[in-house]
Amino acid sequence: MSTGGALPGNDVEVLVNQVQSYLNSLARSTMHLTRDDRPETFTMHQREWALLDEVFAPIYSPSSDISLHFLNLVGETAAPRSGSFLEIGCGTGIISVHGALAGYERVVAADINECAVENTRLNADRHGVSDRVTALRSDLFASLDPQDRFDTIFWSSNYVLAPTDYEYGSVHERAYMDAGYRAHRGYLSEAVDHLTGTGSALLHFSSRGDIPLLRKIAAECGRELRTLESRTVVEGQDVVEHMLLEITPARTRKGGRPFTPRNRAEARVTPARQARSRTLR
Image (cartoon, rainbow, N blue to C red; front, side, top):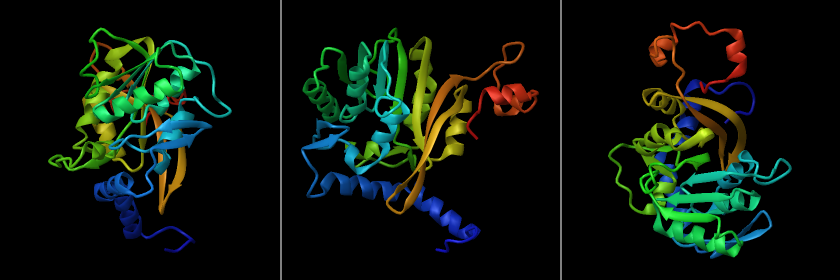
């Protein structure tokens, strides 16, 4: 591959297909689950964490560390927190536990993987926050009290798109890819309904996923996506952009008709409005 000038169109398409390939993600899932040196504990941000079988391992991917920085739970931008925090897809619990350590008084950590739920409980106990962290098995919001509300809802998603008819070979694969983006559609549709009046619904997505399709699904759900932060990292041979997205209800025009891709084009977008909010393109 040439290092000078623009890549030919076909080469760019091949690179994008490799980054977004669900088969490559399936291979990563298998490798990370079965490698001989997969540890029972690991260290991240000066703390030791338990790692159970069938649970996504943060040490083999930069996504968990990026999420911690996106949420300002570690590093120079780390700040005290208060209120309530819901994490979907908690895995080892490293994000939820950091949230409790940062000051959230109530943390709910949900995962469809029962091993991940137990892993989160172990790490909450290990770091002395089991009184503030509740881990439960849930497919997105299904096991939550419908009346429950949170100040912050966060999901570091399984952003790789798998075919709609793909049948998962293990629960571990669900951490790497989403068949037909069914989980993403559910999260986009339901997350804002579980927020407090001033709450924020956040999604960690990346260029390994199908961003145009995500934007289309968001519009179909009556939602808008706003990029709050992004960073680009090298993952093996792939250059991947990670982004923190905020999910909000689609704005409405006079008469209460929601903005859709069709009627949004009819609306006049002023420079001031453009400056206030950058919608995901």
